[in-house]
Length: 158
Image 1 (cartoon, rainbow, N blue to C red):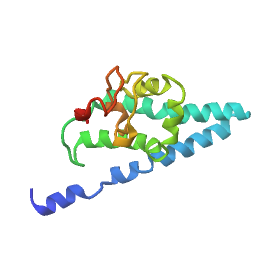
Image 2 (image 1 turned 30 degrees about the vertical axis):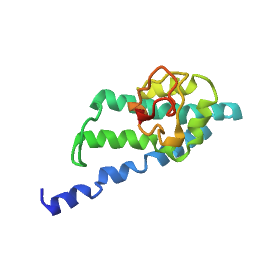
Image 3 (image 1 turned 90 degrees about the vertical axis):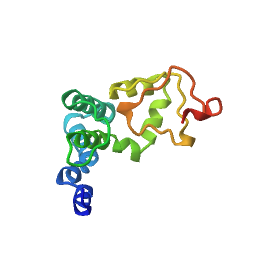
Image 4 (image 1 turned 135 degrees about the vertical axis):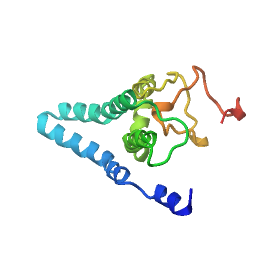
């Protein structure tokens, strides 16, 4: 490839730029739906919670079902990149507001169940060692052992 072809591949496509709005659309549509459908505070809280936590993993699972799991190396002009970018945008809300995931971790087993909705698997007893950068950035790809993961015991695991 020539330098100009490489620069063209690095330039964001309209598809990539448009999908950058997905996290905001997710939140705005959820708030709008809640205000439109619910009268009680409890109903609003429950529907918004379900909208925030269930829509992204279920939409991601549908994306993976229809288009397959992206694998290997790819550029913006490939369909694997588009699938990866859709999945990434569904996760941005949780990357920008990590307290949303931390709330799930407060209830034993709930975080593991939620990761399962994304298509991953993790033991309900697993520890996420956030201090060493093992944040769950790609929830759909997470597969953790059914054991306690601790960097002190297995230093070569990361």
